[in-house]
Length: 298
Image (cartoon, rainbow, N blue to C red; front, side, top):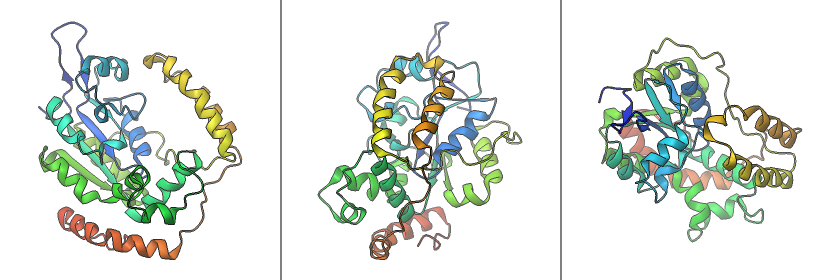
């Protein structure tokens, strides 16, 4: 398959449209910004919402439903993608994608795993996903609490996750970018993204500011109420209309997050040192595999 050619799997006029590239993670590493840069390109169609979680589940055979639900607005764009960050660490996803979309291109954005873990913990804590009585120190040291540890600590074992993908896809089909590049070399990173998926890389999105920088709500309980109320509304909205109601959702977020902050407490030095030890060998393997200097990941 030529880079960027769209997977159309039907002989009918209502051809099934499937993505030809995936933004697979990592969470809390700038993937929302990358999703918006991709979505801004006139030759790219991104799923709505960003994260479908389709290949994490047990309905992988239901490709027609996948196409209809998440790519209903497709209008002939050259490249089609989605951005489920959970795809990176879920062990069964690479084989599932390879089975159904073997020529897919895969994009990964990696952040210092220590900072990523801390950001993930606070992100989920503030949104009521974790019990507030379990500290970051306890989460990263508890080998028995998989529900917490896997999403915070194990996700940062990037080398293991990427090698798992490489067992199903050629290395040339995988683009690995660093969060530092998103921060310091954003224009170059965006050009690399466009070139990788086969669209015109001279296009410049109107807004190049970071999207979705984490803001912690002024009231955790208010967030949980708003999130509970929004979910049934989101499910009831036809997928092709979700972009129309985005302003309504944005207004709700401003009300909940108003007076919020992007600041979180400093990481405990003992926790940082503990995670340095945890990630030292995985980071060494990753640096060798990428042929990049990752010594700044401290």
